[in-house]
Amino acid sequence: MRLLSCITDRREIPVFRKLGVDEVYFAVGDVPNYANTGALGAAADAPGTIRAAHAHGLKVFLAANGREDRMRDPDREVLVKKIRAIAAAGLDGLIVSNPGLFRLFAGEKIGVPLHLSSVQPCFNSGTARFFVERFGISRIILPNQLAAAEAAGILRYCRSAGVETEIFCYKFFGCPYINGACYLHEPEYYTLSGPQREDGMCRMGSGGSLAKVSPYRVFERDAGTIARTAARLSLRFSRGGAPRLLNASSFFDYCLAGVDCVKYGTRTDGTEAKIRNLRAIREMLRAVSDLAGRFPPEEARRRFVERAGSYGEGT
Image (cartoon, rainbow, N blue to C red; front, side, top):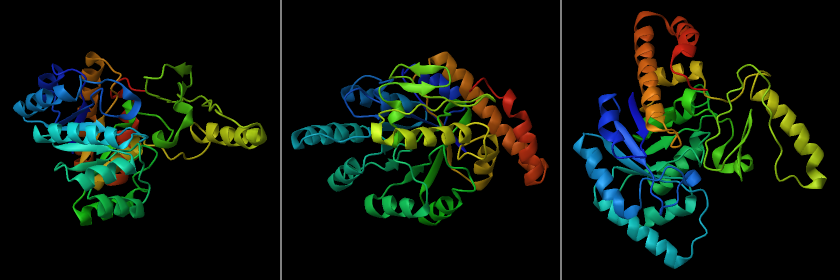
């Protein structure tokens, strides 16, 4: 299983390589990307980042996964020109979420593999097939609300179609909301301790207490329905049943299922936090390999879950 990490500073590249990172991705300020945070310069600086990553034997991808496309035709032409220049520098893949941008990039034949961002979540094999057959995507980044058992159909289809799969590491990207359709993320990210600034990433992690899900943009006529839904979600996201969330157990199952890549993607973290968390992920992957090689799957999973709290300090 390969390890992919975000980078927000070129100086992170050789450090992360020594930690066992196989692939990196970055964002630039003038190409739409989710949350518009942690940009590593502008599009004109991207070739230098690509060369630096390749010099250390790393594949490198660009996040172009902004959720909305309200550009006029001239703006789209400018964006395509930027992407072509970045692709020409040897970019290994482009992370996209908006179907309009998929259509644009596929139609323009920019010559770089396209990855389906978790911001445009894929919850079933029909969705996977649509994006693969319509836009020729080469990798699906699975949403972190989907447990491994629920993703079984997607994984089977991707293996048959030669499409790679990727998951987030649950300890360091724990938001229970569906990013691409979540109005709790605007204008602030709502967490157990209250709102964060807009460029923060939401990490719920209930820690045994009841998650507080806050209704947002509520029309008066729908207030009652929204409040009841929020109450159910509060239970579902913490201790009231089996939530559709990536956790230690499903992380273990994803590893055994043969997912190609695990991602550490919190671009708001500083370099020291990234180093600490990447080490924890490597430790987790080694533990999965060790336990799966020594015990039957059920016993290996149980032992991994028991150890899970000791891997890093993620929430």
